View 1 (cartoon, helix red, strand yellow):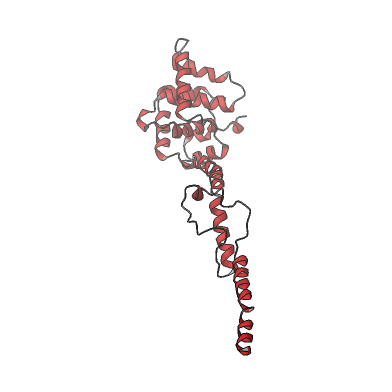
View 2: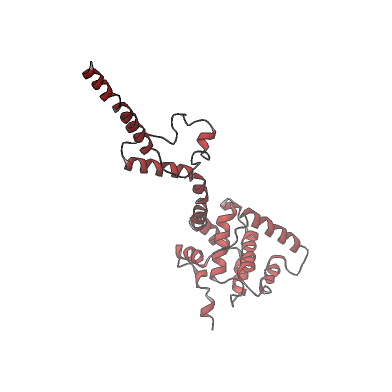
Length: 236
């Protein structure tokens, strides 16, 4: 009897130690992290996370625990991914160079054969209104306005050229000569021109800035085109 009592008494102290060991395992398996990490998670608010998946999750190794924490952090930082779209916006802005299609170059070359456009370019010998960079901007604006190729007419060439002078030239007086070639001495049509200019800008989403790099890329598409020789630096 005494042996049995001793045996039973020997077993009874061991039970708490087993329980304590089990509790230690659970505590060791707790996921470290900032307090309230699940409180702000969208899937908790929507009830998609089961109740059994709380802060105490069993892991096979510490490496797996770290990996899952990284996954959780990436999920919780999802709103910051939206912030990263700002970088994508810049890429799209940069890709606007790529939006200049061969058809826009063809439209430009077609309009260069317009008799009024030819007379205007021949008159501007000092390239005050129509040097190669301002003419490159005309093509860039054609690519942004969103019209079909056949819709571009003489007026669009001068609207784009006038706008290019607005953006790049400090001396705004020379561009006024555009009106003489379009309307002669009449002032009656000028308000209509400015109304069309406003509509043209709106069709481009007010994206009127054209970089020098974009102009040079446009010129490189057909470097032998005669208007790219209109370089102010070559004028004596």
